[in-house]
Every structure is written in C-alpha cells, then in structure tokens.
Amino acid sequence: MKGQTLFAVLGTVLLLDVAAAVSAQDHACSASRVRGAWGYTKTGTLILPTGAVPFASVGRFSLDADGSLSGTNDGSVGGHVSKDVLLGTVEVKPDCTGTMTVEVYDESGNLLRTLAMGLVFVDDAREARGIVTSLVLPNGASLPSVITADARRLARNRGIRR
Image (cartoon, rainbow, N blue to C red; front, side, top):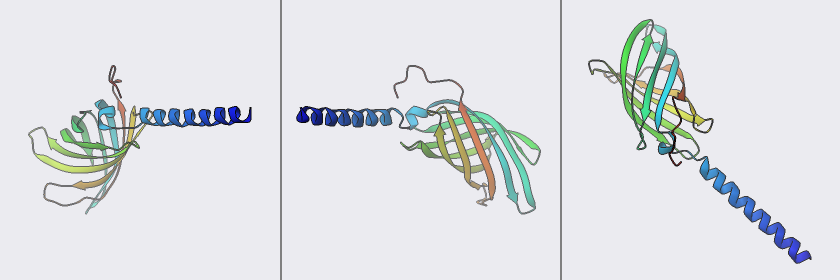
C-alpha cells in the first residue's frame, strides 16, 4: 500500500510539472504571437537645449511574424502637429519583454528621428507598455527624453496557432 501511495504521489507531481511546462509554453511570447494590428499612444517630454518640450502621439502599426513594423501616427512636439510614417523592427523574447527600433519619417519620406524602446507585453500579449530608451535625430544628435507608450491590439488574431 505504501508503494502504491508513493507511486501515486510521484505520478501526480510529474503530471503537475508537465502541465506547468505546457502552460508556460502556451504563454511564451514571440514575434509571431504578437503579430497583427496595434493602436497606441505615446506621451512625455523631450529635453531640448532650450528646455523641456511636451511630446504626444497617437497611431497604429502592424507587426509581421518576422518582427517587421510599419504604421502611421499623428504626433505633437511642443504643439507642432505632424503626420508621420513609421518603419522598424521588434524583437520579442519568450518572457514577453522586448525591444523596438523605429524610424519616423514625414509624409515626404524625410527621416525625422530614430527611436529605440524597451517593451513588455501584458494581458496575454493583448497589450504592450514601453519606454523610449534612445531618440536620435538624422544629424546624429541624441535627445534625452522621458516618453512612455501604451499599445493595444486592434483585433485578436483568430485562427493563428500560438
């Protein structure tokens, strides 16, 4: 009887370990898992040589399974509003953290800035949070900033195996 009880306990522990591993795999993040259409806002402050300037943008972007990003936004820097085009890449780690590098262009195709962000995907990869870690102008000048972002999927990816 003791042998059967020990066998049952060991079997249960093994099943729980396997279930936990499968569950962790189901929730692991990847570029393929976060692909799709997203809407976002970014707000914060740019620190120019002349002083702090408010920054805000709202837009949408699409992520491909290979990590490619494209999108558009309406942005405001110190009250000057522009329509921008976004091209970049996203790297997603299994722990749902990641990085994004985005080149921002005006509608004529002129590069305005390149920014890098640290990311975390939350709520089963339906939302993302980010912070700008680097903002560089076309002339190579780096601008200090305090800018955060919130993004949400515009629709769930239906029929896509994760």
